[in-house]
Amino acid sequence: MGVLLFVLCTLPALGQNRAETQFTVQGVCGMCKERIETALDVKGVIRAEWSEETHKVFVVYNPKKIEIAEMHRLVQNAGHDTDCGKASDEAYAKVHGCCKYREEPEHDGHGSHDGHGHH
Ligand SMILES: [Cu+2]
Image (cartoon, rainbow, N blue to C red; front, side, top):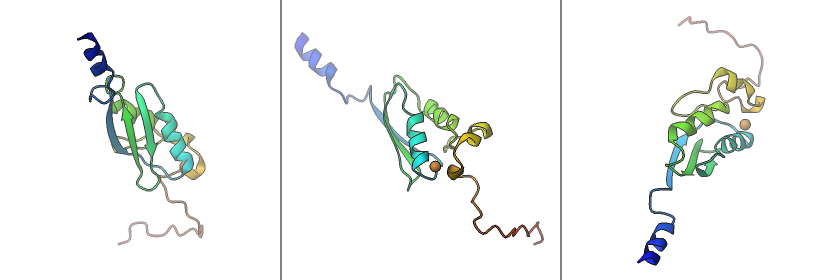
């Protein structure tokens, strides 16, 4: 009896201590990936993996220890917008120059600043 219970309770995926989620996180490059994954390297998160291509982070976590809202906050604090909210300007200012996902870098800087609403 006791042995059976013990075996059942130590089985991993009973759907209580382990769940998966996925959400969008804005980012650009491998540095972003590292930053995002590091931000999610906290208690309760078993695995976090961000994709540069889809801009989605896949998280395996323990719902008893961390809430999804908390993950969004961690990522936003690291300077990355998520589909639940934006990073603060302060946090965004800290990300590396090549990681500025909000504005398109103008490589041909010929000052094409026309178009002030004349249409
Ligand atoms: Cu980056």
